[in-house]
Amino acid sequence: MSKLETNTVDSISGTSTLTLGGSNASVVSAGTEVRSNKLSPASGTALQIGDSGDTITIPSGATIVNSGTATNFGESNTPMFFVSGPNQTISHNTNTKMTIDSESFDTDNCFDLAGTKRFVPNKAGKYFFTLSLFSPDTDDIDYWTSNVKKNGGSGGGFSGVQRNYNNVCYNGILTANGSSDYFEAFCEQESGSNRTIAVSEFSAFYIGN
Image 1 (cartoon, helix red, strand yellow):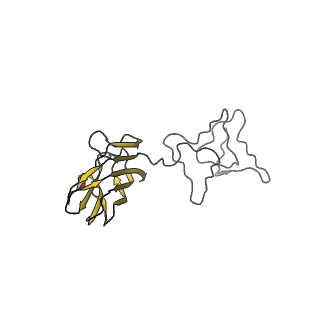
Image 2 (cartoon, rainbow, N blue to C red):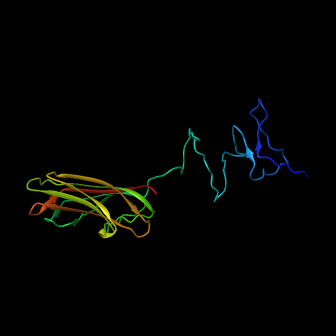
Image 3 (spheres, rainbow, N blue to C red):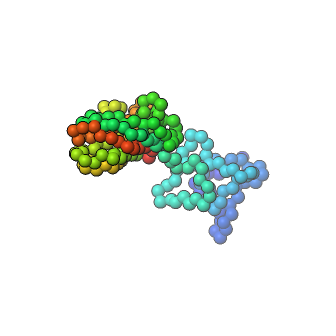
């Protein structure tokens, strides 16, 4: 049996059809470039490119055009959650954990609504957080501070301050290790007396590595 070594297999000039072998042909050897205008499955409707563990590379400058339905392609932004809380009294100059009692969604069951009121992501990466609150009390309030604590405050987090406003909303991006990091919502006010939070909302979603 003779051996043919080549770097490129292409159709002849003026044609767009390339046939590799006949009914007795074996698999094309690794390292050979195959050029074709269309790849179709031998039978049925499923076409597989590569095997588990393979790396399929799309070179710089190339464009993927999808005119069909993309399944499991790209990020789904999960885990994600959205929770909220009812009326809550906030003492003067006291960093207070937000009362959370309602869950709109929690895709991966990462938010502990019944217990710790913590978000513990099951996937490492960066997350976009939003914490907002509304208070009917506006008089004599110097500052409202909302903050998301990471690992109880020891692992970082973010906070925002509003002066003389009863609506506070802050966003921030935090990184989780996907195994033990946890996140909680807090707020604080400086008015000299107790104030009321009528509505609080806390949410986050995965945005990537």
